[in-house]
Length: 98
Image (cartoon, rainbow, N blue to C red):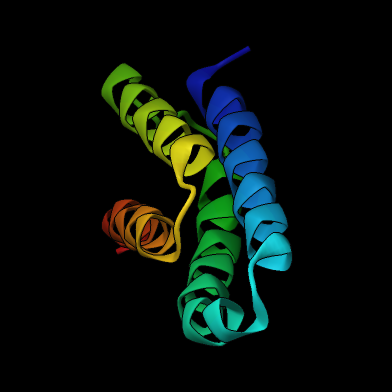
């Protein structure tokens, strides 16, 4: 499996984790988190298109960073931690889509 395939798998799992945490958050928190999560999902769609093109673009460092982000997402128990994890993920994707 090449690094792009690994990134698709890792990122997809992280995004699902974020969505599940979002759904289990209180409605007040969801109202604050939703815009950032929607932005992330839109950016990720663009990133997926880049990842499925021929040629590997994902480095080992990219995978390590995404793995760290996924760990941060899994550990996020409060609204602010979840927002911070989403923000970090948006920053990561923005650097890859540009």
